[in-house]
Length: 136
Figure 1 (spheres, rainbow, N blue to C red):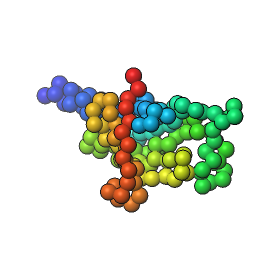
Figure 2: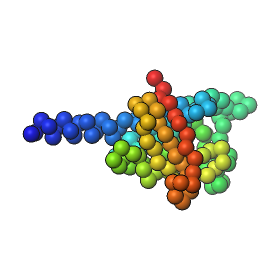
Figure 3: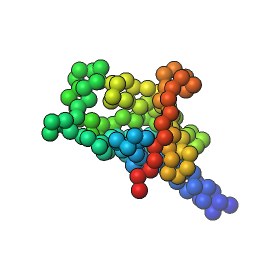
């Protein structure tokens, strides 16, 4: 019985952390690195196809908060506060540096190497999904 509980717990833990790693966005222009802090999951822009403009790092110029407009896009944390719940990562937010807007967000794995990220306003039905592929 104890062995069964230990095996079940380790399978659950592996499943919970299954999204940890680097993911390529659909356009191939950027990679998000998803990691865990405490019990929550976060993601940062780990790679951008064109990280610089005129030899200088691209900045978060679309951010509505003027104080944040001078931060670099590379390594910017854009996924925040996701909780694992029954095979899904929920209750997080995603920041879109192209628009400067932050959306509610949920993530689900379609397979070990395919991640569906859904950003929305209000309810999940009113949103957009994108499919990311794991970087190997």
